[in-house]
Image (cartoon, rainbow, N blue to C red; front, side, top):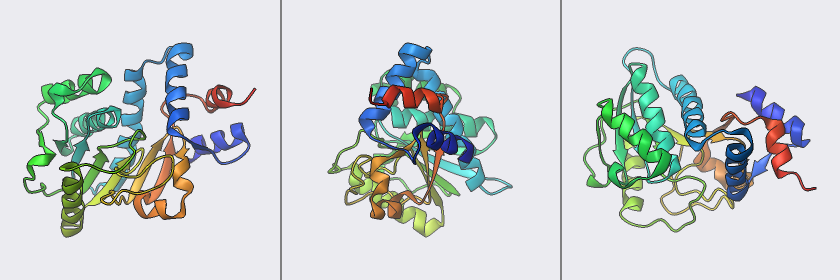
Length: 237
């Protein structure tokens, strides 16, 4: 993970912080010029997040709960759930948007998770949080701009409190839900993660000192797009 971040720094000549718009441009350009479809980028993101999740889980009989939202961040969560399931880890998905209303790559990965028999139910039903070692937050991604709406805000508060009561760790996928990736501004019920796996680069909002209260330790990982390509895509001519 550190090797990729060093490659980014060498390509740009300094530490790299990107906006949500720049990240979308990288995804689009990688698809157009490299032929990397969104489904592959989502799979790569999920695999890298799974690698980190495994380091946060104990040996023995580990268990995880994956919180999946309506967009591509939720799609990443469905990939992570599938990969952990295939590793023999007990997982459960709590969704904020029913899989049937999803679209594109997120819908595909939600269908695969369901076909594999991974248990899933609505986060908004507020059933007791299953006993687990790790909660993976894939509710809201870089496109989020506050404020949070109900009933999601209340559900996020409930999850945070349940994790504290159980002693479960939290891994945020790309950005903690409720944190504005561009500004670092936190909504009232922003998830406070122990660690965050950031795809492609750190977000500009992570430069805000208070953002670390929500991100915890940040790990920057590649989703299959070379650092040199990212630089060429974003550099000012």
